Image 1 (cartoon, rainbow, N blue to C red):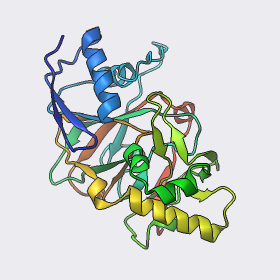
Image 2: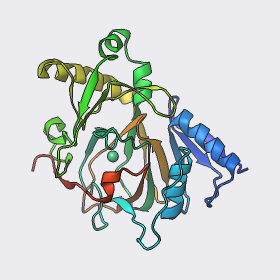
Image 3: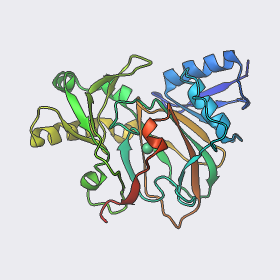
Image 4: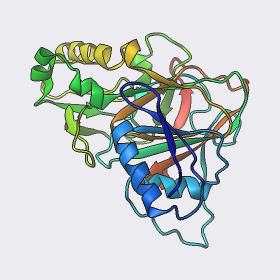
Length: 287
Ligand SMILES: [Fe+2]
């Protein structure tokens, strides 16, 4: 069994893990330890590791106890990059508002990971908050008001929610998928309750007028995104960050297209079916 050392990154969530030797497969005892840690801490950081796309995908699936889908060997393996330099980079510039990826589909993407392939300094950090902790600490009165409600999530409300910040990036899709989910959403693996609304994608609360819904969402956002709840990850080349995409939300400050390289290889587990065929167009929110 690997000799893993673990250091908590905040009192509530996040842990830095050292001592992992990347190989496929990992020993079962190591995987058990990582799975337990992932469900407890929800975000794991491995620093200064050299890994390829295959290991990143393998670990992304293994850590949530799923089999990686078999891939046709005649089809080239695809890599996705959050990047201001790679051709077809995802979110190539701009600021991203708080969200969980693909909140607008009921098809849960349970784990996201990013690996620092090429990171120049200074670079823009990624920030995280815990929707699980936000539910636990939600004031009783507010909790009673929302626990039986559902909320609607759409692709991207960055334009509307940018607060006039022209650096905010918006993603345009060629369809208008949306979904309604319980505002107190149960985590499919851990059973924890999550305060499941976000700044970037939650369009409204079912059954309330727009005015009531906007006002209630604003109260919930103030609780979710309070400065003291934020964990910041400062990127270095060779960092691997894996997080629970349902229990945590993420955001980032502005990335300049002309700034230092910021190329982070991204994995989704399980991979949402739509990503194989569709990619959004990215633009400044005020364009
Ligand atoms: Fe994201």
